Image: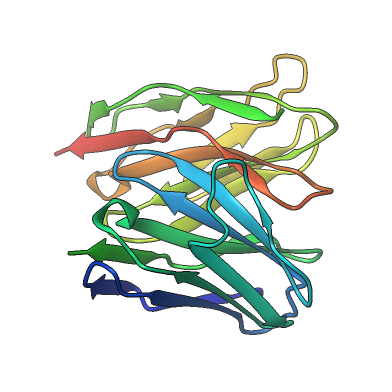
Length: 114
Length: 112
């Protein structure tokens, strides 16, 4: 139980374009999801907390206009990287917490901006 | 705020060697503690967890005990295999806020 499906697993986009990453909770309702970013050979850093039906809460230093988060339903949260640049290339992972299963993570999205 | 300090790597061991990866934490309240494993190019997989003091998490031969007095959650395995080569992350979970704080990760390479 408590599976989070994240898509796409890999994406390459041109500089200046936008990319959307989806996270779906398959067998539970996720009122809150968390978005993390991982630079090569570094740890995961929390970017934002996504709340269903309300605005996301961003961590200090994360540009909310660049990383748009939408959590329109209890099973779907999306992260859109707008006007992507090479420095946005990273590994993005979503997570949700459930009462029964604790923390569960998506498989991650490797974004490469060329 | 919450923080996790993890033993620096990389760690290189021979097959069947004993593994210890140290992890200490700073947190308010009573967090849950986790070890995650990340294989090359993949996402995180939960390896084991402990939700309260003196709990021992175990999975696939790995063990870690939640030590409140030393604020530690060291990962151990008695005999590592080549397939254990991966990056290991220690993390704590804020039970109330739901977010996780990660250590920097330790890269383990096991040689045959």
